[in-house]
Length: 224
Image (tube, rainbow, N blue to C red):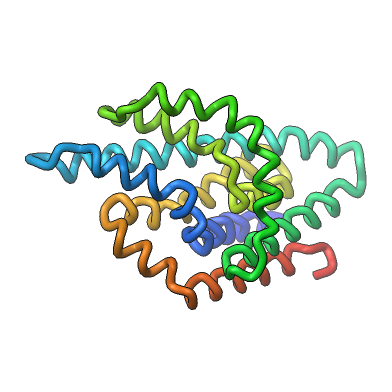
């Protein structure tokens, strides 16, 4: 169990890294806008870095919180229902396969999964408008924390996998490392949006990333 737990963190990081194309579509625009809203001048890069880091760590913090909440429910179910672990692993594998198929642009069924979180986002999205315009890192942090609840197939796929962890802290850490995996592309979007989008929207990159996510999903299924 200890070895499996140790391996889960770099695997979660890899899922985030491979799924960065999806992140750019969902969150890249707001990340880039934080940079464009800043006045150019002395200290611009420092202010830009602070805003981008605040937004993204707010987002990652929400992912970690959601994973902890999911784990509280799933670990309780696992202790009372012997098949809970198998069911959770099957869901996690299927969601990763769906995400991989979407990433590779073969099938977009993951959009139906994303609709699950739509009611929550309808409640939270008006709060994001109250934070505009973003002038301080604290505002960016709050915006990121709200943005972390945006319905996202990649997040849901990883949450299903995080729910398999044996404890609430390990589930939260799994999602934290996933968030760190998405961080390079999200920061690069703020610094060099056109270049990073050009690279990650390349057809070959999307298909390789999608295929790897599908394989990871197959490996997650209880049959393997």
